[in-house]
Every structure is written in structure tokens, then in C-alpha cells.
Amino acid sequence: MAGEPQADCLFCKIVAGDIPATVVRETATTLAFRDVNPQAPSHVLVIPKAHYPDAAALAAAEPAVAADVLREAGQVAADEKVEDDGYRIVFNTGAGAGQTVFHAHAHVLGGRGLQWPPG
Image 1 (spheres, rainbow, N blue to C red):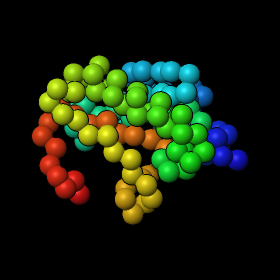
Image 2: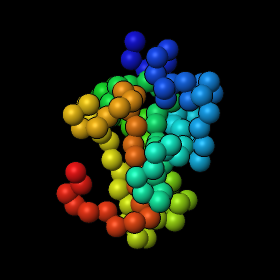
Image 3: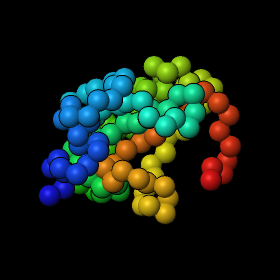
């Protein structure tokens, strides 16, 4: 069921505390932690605590929580001191776009030049 923890989901296990992560921020609805394979000097994932397979599903079901994820992404950028030089918020959707964990999540990347287009 959408929104419910999934037994086979890596991020649901992180939310539950079953798998360790380097948490940098937490709210009632979100969790932000460092990416284990960083692609920039600052690379933090911001996830909703509720399970949704991607950002579109999250936004359709719980727009307020989707807004919480974006708000926290901005706060992460401020905490990481990358907001003035610029940062990127990325939601990959689907395996073809590079999504490897099918639990909605935003990548907050900064601390280096970020080329456009990305990929």
C-alpha cells in the first residue's frame, strides 16, 4: 500500500533505523542523510518517511509532504553552505533515468561546478 513501509526498501529500512545512515536533518515527515556514493562534495538525499515509489507518486498522494521534501532540500543546501554558489535538486524517476532505490528521494548536490545539461 502506498505510503506504508516496504520490507524490501533500503530507504524504509533507514527510516526505521534498521540500516545506519549519516543523518544530517530530520523532521516529522522527512529524513536527510549523506549519499554513500557522493557525486559532489556535498551530496545529501532528502526522503519522505512515507514510502512512495517516485516523486510524482508522492506529489499526487501527499503534496504537503512533497513540499516538505523540497523545503528540507533548501535547508540542507543552507546547512551545507552551498546555497550562495548554487546547488542542484534532482529527482530521478525510473531505472532509465538512474533511479536505483524506488522510494521517492531528492539528491541535493553542491560544492562544485554543475554542468548543464547533466547527463
